[in-house]
Length: 249
Image (cartoon, rainbow, N blue to C red; front, top):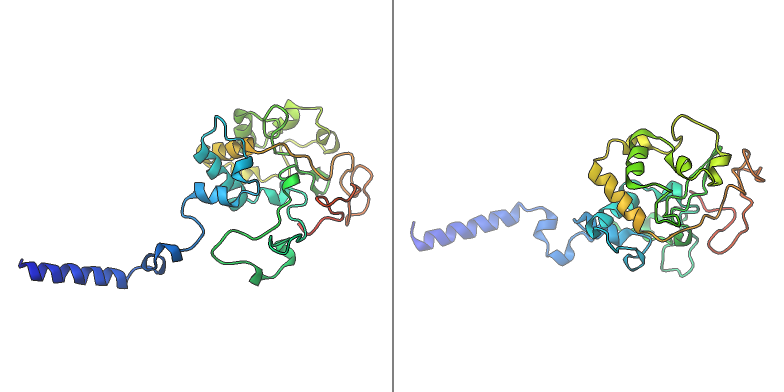
């Protein structure tokens, strides 16, 4: 093939490739979707607890990032285990509670704009009938929900309530009705995740700071236990981080 013909062939090929490229491929990288293609990078970006506040010592940082992606992006663990999950807008720049906002408040190519309740992140306290969401942040021994990794894998695979078995003095164990397996907690869905994914979730939970809930077993679940009797409110004292009644969940 003559040099000129070869050059024209290559140029035509590049032109056709550009014409049929997807929009994200055709644009400059700076104009691409801001939601990262890397689960690790995206996991750290969407973690309500900033990376600088995570305990990464001795941990696989990629696993922690993937764990955050699964906990905060794919699974919405905070939707049940953080009470409340979001707080009203304080600065007019953090998004406040996205459920009380407008769709136009959010971009289609960036992280969720929201004022997360980081003080009570994954600390539990939300009621589902007589059942109360557990605190799945690390305990004083650094174990999420009082679970070793092996225990965590067993819980996610079988629904066994090993948190109360390992720490029966936890007040939450006294208020819930007995059941053969965990109720409300969607462990059947987590059962189907790979070991790698479950280990990543555990790595992220283990990296979190300790957290205490707004609503506690002493306050109870409305209509079922404790002093609370009205399903529209709880008896815990209202503070800036624990508005009472809580925002929509």
